[in-house]
Each structure stands twice: as structure tokens, then as C-alpha cells.
Length: 318
Image 1 (cartoon, rainbow, N blue to C red):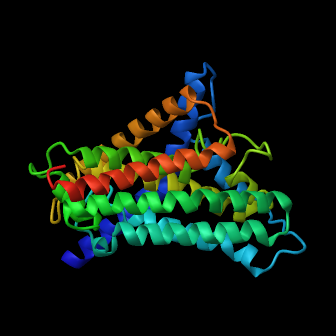
Image 2 (cartoon, rainbow, N blue to C red):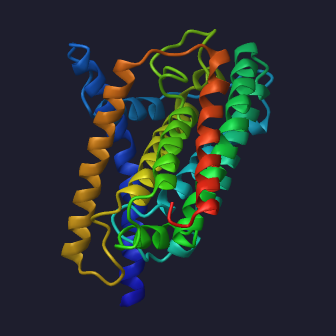
């Protein structure tokens, strides 16, 4: 019975992140529209868009190979697995031993690599531009993410998310400058990895400025639905990591009752909604920067992560 209960909770978490990802995107879009004094689409519109794409036929480019057809499913699978590993409402789940930050970075890197290859495979010039820009961004975002992981692992003594969340809930954490720098750097990396403003505008299709949209211009039908859902899951993934590491309150421990798990899921949904509102407010108050200024933005994130690691090495109390 204990094994069945653990499997049920793990399955519930995997299903929860899959169902909440479009809702999070809908909340961000609705909040941005309201802040701009527009009515905006319903928060359920992303579900309708995905259902519409799944009903449409797939149109393939003449020069597309098997990689172009397989990439959407591989990207979605890698992103979903990474998002499902992050503790959302409970710790100590069946697969929590594999919920390591380094493993999650590797899964996201694999998905990014497949997306860049798919953008190049069709032979469209905008796909090549988007892929090259994506690789430029990732070459700076991944080292910054590694520095963040090193900082958190040095403080918590592990890179496993359940262990990190348990340490952050303990009274021995205190106020640490290195954790504050790591948090700022992680938010900057999350913005860049999800192609949000000021790095990219997900609501535009201007060819000269877009990054993510340029790589998926040749996709349609269920293939585009898989890629769009993977992008929604990636946004939820990074917000879940920030919540798990820096605001882990409400996470239920191993062996908790069903009512406690339901309460933890409710708290997680509230945190997710609050993060979506904050993201919408941030995106309406800043302007998109030029593509050539993106390296400066990510270099700042890398320097903050490196400074956090150095502070941890210089003095353990920081």
C-alpha cells in the first residue's frame, strides 16, 4: 500500500505540472492585458489553442528530415520529465532521488539542443537565425546556472532539491548575501531561458528580433502544440525551482496525510499565481532590449553567480 500511495502522489505531481503549465501562461497573458487596460483573452485560452493545434494537420517542409518530425516529442518529453522532478507540493517522492539540479539542467540542455537542430533542419533562414541566437544565449545562461547550483549546493550540502528545500526550512539558514545574489541571478537566467521580456517578446513575430518563435516558424499542427506546451512547462519549471529553493514553505514531508498533500498543492497553486502576476507586472514595466545587449544581461547574471560562490568560499556565514 505504501508503494501504491507513493506512486499515486508522484503521478499526481506529474499530472499537476502538465495541467497547470497552460494556466500559468494564461494568467500571465491576462494580467499583462489588464495592466495595459485591455480586456485580454481568458486564462483558459492556452488550453483552447493547444486543442485547436492538436486537431490540425501537420504541414512538413520538403527538405525536413526525420529529426524535424521527432524533435517536438523529444523536446516535450525532456521538459516534462524535468518539470515533474521539481518538488511542487511534496518532498521525498518516489523519484525525488533523481530531482537533482544538475540533472534538470542536463535535461533542459538536451531539449534546447533538439530545438536548435530542428530550427536548422528545415533550411529556413529565420530558423537558422533563431538557432544561432538561442545558442548564444545558452552559452552564457548555462554557466550562470552552474554557478547558482554551486552556490546553493555549497550552502545546503547537496544539489538534490528535496534536501535543499528541507535545509531552507531549517533555522540555520539565516540571511545570507550569497543566497540573495543567487536568487537574483536565477531570476535573470529564468527570464533569458524562457525568452521573456527584456530578452525576447513571446507575443511578437517580428523576424529581426524574435528568438524562440524563429525556430518554430516551420512547425504546425500537433508538432507546434508539443513545442508550445513544452515552452509553457519550461516557464513553470523555472518558477517551481525558484519556489522550491527560496520559498519552500508549504511543502509537505514524506509520509504526510492526503489532506496535508492537498493543502500543499493549494499553497503551490497560490505561489504559482503570485509568480505569474509578478512576471506580468515586470514585463509591462520594462522594454525589450536589443539582441546585442543580451550578452551584457547574461554576463551580469554570471558575475552575480560567481560572486555568490566566492562569498561562500571566503566566509561560510555568507
